[in-house]
Image: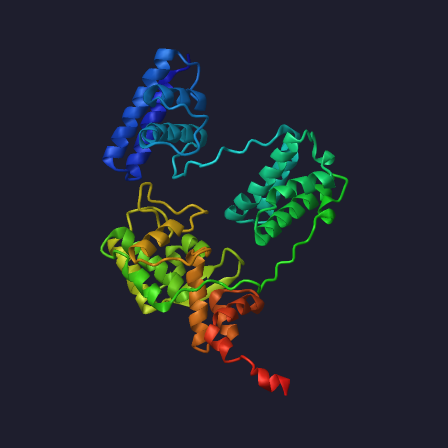
Amino acid sequence: MFDLELLRNAVDVVTKIMAESEYAISTIKNQRGTLNSLLKFIEKNQYPKFDEEVGLAFIKESTGTEMEGFWGSSDRKTSRVMKPIQNLLFYLENGDLTFFMRSHVKPFICPSAFEPEYQLFQKEYRERNYADASIVCNNNIVHRLLIHMQEKGINSSNEITTPRVTEFLNLYVQSKPRYVATVLYVLRNYFTFLKEVGIIQIDLAAALPHVRILRNAFIPHSWKTEDVKKLLEAIDRGSPKGKRDYALLLMIVRLGLRVSDIRRMKLSNLNWSRKTISITMQKTGQPLELPLLDDIGWSVIDYLKNGRPKTVSDRLFVRHRAPFDAFGENESFYKELHRYMQAAEIKAPIGVHCGMHSLRSTLARKMLESKVPLPVISQALGHKNINTTSIYLKIDIEGLRKCTLDPEEVLQ
């Protein structure tokens, strides 16, 4: 049996970090109690080491729940036992304790036949400066491809043929054209990489079909002005979290900022003397300076003075549950938005994905209605190309109605 004293010390450090991160006293007490029970369990069963397998065995004995791994959904009782074990494992692996979300899906284990090139491709992502969210989305497709090839008995990337790729694409036959285009983009990217580094000989990327998705084929969803007002009024600005969410939403509604840029915004990005917000946009890598409007400024001041928890984080907006740290790279604030929509009794149109980006589209529509020139809108929204901004011309319905032709005039 290994030295339990080392594990006891690790438990002490974990609970100390939680106290320094201002976790609730009750949370620390509960997690400490669970970990003490874990130590007794390990000692009783004389396990030679502590790992995920031992943790799962302890969960089964404590709750009766048998789990394949630390992923997926679980009941409250199981989660209460699982979280402290995950924290301890995380600390033992990383030497620290930071906020992390338990995955809802089984962690991907790359088939050994494709492991070397898969790892090279992950390195390529970093060298190309892909955003974490983009890597996750792209990998979901690559993972499915590699597992499919393994199931079909393919033992190396060089054995992948065009018919096999076509077979894989048939899995997406019911998907929308835009998503199929995304799948093809990811596959083309992956196969091109494999060809360039000499892992495959056939140019599979060249054999992939092309799906033409017109950039202007879809009308962005935008909100009614009265619904935007109802949304903001539904926020409880008396609570710390409400102060944060109000300031955050106001930045999107009034300035059209992307969620990715708000999520990464630092205190130093606000210049109070010049009344400006200066950032480098995550999506384009380009600098952007916007006015720090009075209503936004006062809402941020209210949040900083009366809502923002004590934290060492340099981010403007932070989590309001310990540890009080920056948001994860995949945080879209979708749940918060729909919670306020429900409170305001606002219903999203059927078949429309109503996320934070739709509020950005709403600002574009309002600017168009106010006769703001397209180049100015493009600059305000941080678009690299004015053609991107032209998409929003379609949501200026009233403006388009004025451009309609009289059929009798045309036929004369």
